[in-house]
Amino acid sequence: MSALDFYISLIRLGRLQRWEEDRLQLNPKLVDYEVNFKDKRASYTHFNHNSQPITISFDLAMEMKEMVDKEQITVLHLINQKLHNSSRIEGREFLLDALHQIDQLKQGAAVSKEFSPYPSIIESLNFIQQELRTSYSRLLEGSSSETTIQEPKITSTLKRKAPLLPQTFTYTGIKYFKSKGDKDTANYKLDSFVRGLLNAGLVSNFSLKLKKESPRSVISELKNIFKGVESSHSVIWTGKDGQLRFLIRQLCEQGLIEPRVGHWKVAISCFKGENGNAFSEIKISKAQLPMETKKLNDIIQQLSFSTR
Image (cartoon, rainbow, N blue to C red):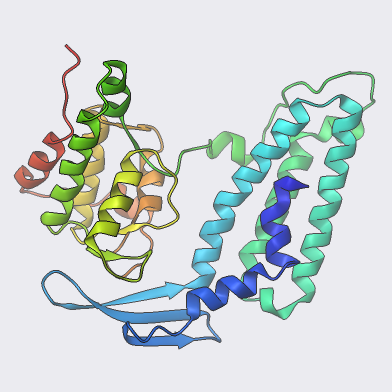
């Protein structure tokens, strides 16, 4: 059951323990590095571009929830895709096997104490199971007379309230300049844009990927964020919340990035607060806009292009 590989490796193949060890390992290169193995937390001191100390913290329970929230959408997509390409009989057997395997995974997580700090794992499996039962109730209860499975009428919260979204933005100039046979201009504009954010002190030069200061790594991650490349590491936003709101709003309104619907969800997956904690949609989308916007507008201008 390839769709459930993430959960299988997490629960049965020791991936959780390896992930914990990797996230909580002591790092002598970090200042004031402290690990609380009981609470699954770690923290260290980082000095920003003004040489002011900032405490960067990791909460593994929160990180796990972010991981499974993304993974459950992927699982449902893979299972739905398999069912849409199956006969009704094959699809029903596949679905029953998936539901049975989810039950086994839930039981495995419930009996092991190492999963107790991460309730989101079982909650995620419950969500997937309920979503499948709701979406394919007729398939589970009905006859096998139809040869193929029609698109289901999904009534659960995933279909109504949580459409699939990319995890990063895509600069619209990439497609435009490519259509003109220009391979360099989009990359040049993106490079100027992300370096402008870094040089203005709006993003930290501390790389969450490398756990150390590395402007080169941060620039690479920023480019990925605006090139539509899925990235497992966010970038630390050191500007004010309202500046981030203004940046994303202007990029959307000027048609410089996609998606324009669900952009706050994408933004909070790409950027972390100055202490490494996650933003919330409400915090960013309702933040007070800055009075002074010239610096940001100058940076945004680096991405502008004319289609005339």
